[in-house]
Length: 379
Image 1: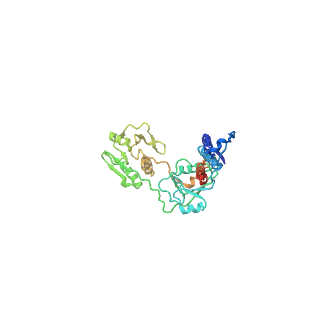
Image 2: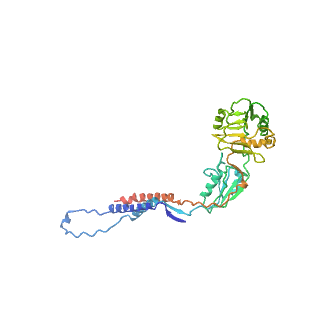
Image 3: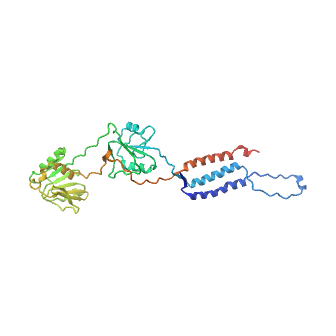
């Protein structure tokens, strides 16, 4: 444990120690001379030399101590190495609280992985939790010698794409999930809105794909050129130039899949998005404004595009037209055990201002008691 001063210039306030000294010199008890008539017949004697004299040494000492403590408070005393190295237990949301208490033990300090790290005795946190970030924060703020145990459910929510790399070797334990924990909602299938002209032959491939997704009710087909809601995928099978209304619809956030016969200047950032077994591109496309425009490179006929009859056509089409997936947020707990190669973070010194404030309050109380005691004013 190393003591130090965070603001050593505050010790300049020690110069104020002269104030109590001057006060005691000015207010010291003096004998008041009393003249009477017979004294005029006495010869004057030499005045004795005056000595520097302080009265009420205890009161003076307390006042000097009070000033010194105030100066020390301004200097912000602190210590390094005064840390609590007791074991800590972190519990991820989704773990059964009863199982977590049993695994942590009665004497361990257990906290939920949530903002503020509430105690395990409080209610389990609700809502999305940035699990990885909070674990890194707790590890960085924990003394280097303190052991850490992390209790997690079989499947973790709220993780990010970066693997956990902590400053210490942790005990990573998988605990049973809380009963009745909500299951992850299924990802909704995209809605296909087909706009065609002439033959209806290509429609059956898209209708079959929607049926394979279990979303037959999300498939519509019209011979006109009306535009669907922006959350649907527009499958434009009409040949010739693509209307400006469709381009504007895509630029505002829509996704359009065009036939090879549809004429549209593709974005400069276009590239192959779906290839066959031989590596030849089947669909190309890229971003256009806030949306995406895709286009088949071949006619939608089995002779030109055999993948239309492939059993994986529905899954490949879904991956193609679905919105880009967010970064992974769910992972098996067994595969997410943290490494321990990160460099430790230097912990800030622990300030002693609170303890010093208590001493100052006690010194001030003692000074008031000594300064106001009845004996000082006795005749």
